[in-house]
Image (cartoon, rainbow, N blue to C red; front, side, top):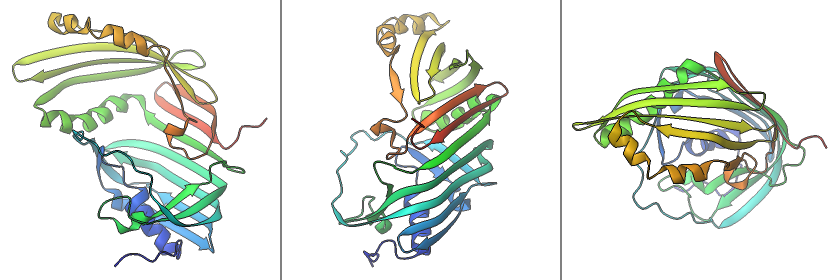
Length: 291
């Protein structure tokens, strides 16, 4: 039976939607352990008085799925009903959660966010009727206030990335023999990344190294600088000659955390701070920056 078009019906319906739709990572990532995340909500009319997503002590396993050879183009769903409200208090916390055994600390707080409840003509996820419903922050985000605090031990970053990459590489017959990643503070507005890796495919072994500086401004602009890549393997080094020109084109490219493609739905990020020592920590404020 299709869910009632009335949305939001009650707090239980909101919790069910969070679990079955909002917490799903998408087709590119496979996740297990999501059922361990605790979700509670309080609803008064169309106002979300409180929403708490607590992943503390949850143990998740994540890895990248094999890419689809021909992804379906995104289609804007037809909206058949909408209503507005206010999300007065939203918090997502993990103190910590474990991803592939690696502890990750997270605290996201959001208050006074204008929201829109949407009902679509058809489910947006095949086989998931709850995906006919949606909850979005209104585009202008007027009045939103909040913060983000994320940290992970620097020594845990390489094992975490390796755990996510290895299943996909193994399906292609590639064995990742080594992966080392260093993240170092580089001035007040940047971090320097250094990576070294080695892999084996059938009888062939290859190794490579790369380094880059990422500049991060307080208003959420990331810029790639000083990108270098090389290999001690002469065959790999020769092959890199043909890709260095494209890599050089990437230098100076920017990524704006407040751009539409970042998917933050009108929530502005400002006051961004990144610190890298024993821990890599990212802090930011949410909402419109003071003028």
